Image 1 (cartoon, helix red, strand yellow):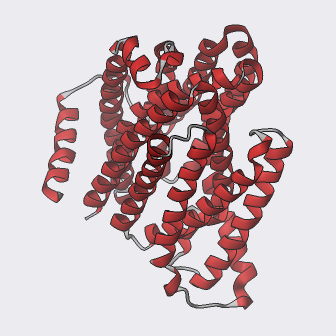
Image 2 (tube, one colour):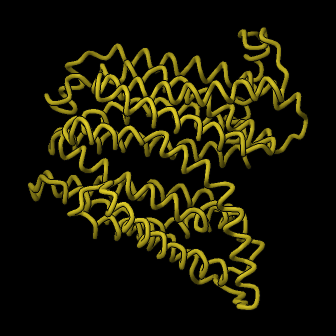
Amino acid sequence: MMIKKIFGTATARFLNAALSLVILGIIAKQLGAEAVGTISLIVLAVAIIQNINSLAGGAPIVYYITRIPTANLILISYTWCIISSLGGTLIMYHLKLFPPEYVYEVLALSLILSLGQIHQMWLLGKERIKLFNIISVLQILATLGTLAYYIFIAEEKDVAVYIRALFVGYSIVLLFAASKTLGKISGWNPKILRQDSIQIFRYGFMVQLAAIFQLLNNRLAYYIVKQYLGLKSLGHFDVGVKLSEGMWLVGKSVSLVQYARISGNKEPEYAKNLTISLLKFTVFITFLMICFLLLIPEMFFVAVFGAEFHHVQQIIFYLSPGILSIAASMIFSHYFSGTGRPFINTIASAIGLTGIAIGGFVIIPEFGLAGAALATSAAYFCSLVFQWIMFFRLASPHIMDFVPSKKDIKTLQSIYHQLINKN
């Protein structure tokens, strides 16, 4: 049953990624590079606020859904959602981290998305994985459909149409997920509300800090590019980043299987061997995918995204080492999480964030978009090096274990046959 749920989640992710690329192609070709840059800052602002909201409305919902009265849980998460959306928007507005004319849109989008996430996490906590995945796909289908209507039928071509599309997608998630959960709220107990709040935020802080660091690690370069190179260049960079990050799908899907197996098996030797086998497989497949992406002729990108994006392939080339580093890092991350050491991932993300913060301001003004891609790759690589060192200290593998062997093939065949038999 677990493998079936993992396979369904991986399938939903692949579908969402494919649809996201379609959306990216539409906004790039129809709206232009500067609009893509503006949109990327708006979406990033919303994502940061959502991550802050996840301190109470993300992983804690999943963990405490059976441990805390649901009425208390919802009240705490809803209250924090409103505070984080208002506070996060206000802070980022004053820091000028998104175009100020979109302040109300950022506030509304972050509030709707974060409320929807609370109910999605409820479904996840109740192991209603199929429904969770359906809602995720519905969100992106609704966004794509609304965007296509405004651009191709209503013939409106500006940033506002994408924001409207996001409103529709996020609202459908909130309404659909809330309809499946709100009727099941029970157990209101104000006497333990303070105690429950402390538990939720303590757990959420430990889990979410690494995620916030990783998001900033992935996207801090956006703000540096915007500051030194402008919105149009940011649009070019965003397209290159989104295409490159599509190569993470293998690592994300494989690491889900890895995490489930390591969490359910307490043998250190098994965790080490499985991690090494999946690491070799993930790096190899990701490398092949990157090579394929780099072999795509420039004219293809021009045809899909427009003439403005003719140098996207160059950005992808300089991002490639970083994408390969992250693919490997995902495997190590799930090893540390599955063996009860998530703090190592937090430190790794913080190291990468420090690297992009220092390197970005030095390299980007001098080398432009190529420098942004190189700085991003360097930050990812620094995180990976730290995880690699910690893995060697904790698991004590032999260097020859990382050479491909027949045992790796047997491990992968075992996982493959289990996936086929379960589905």
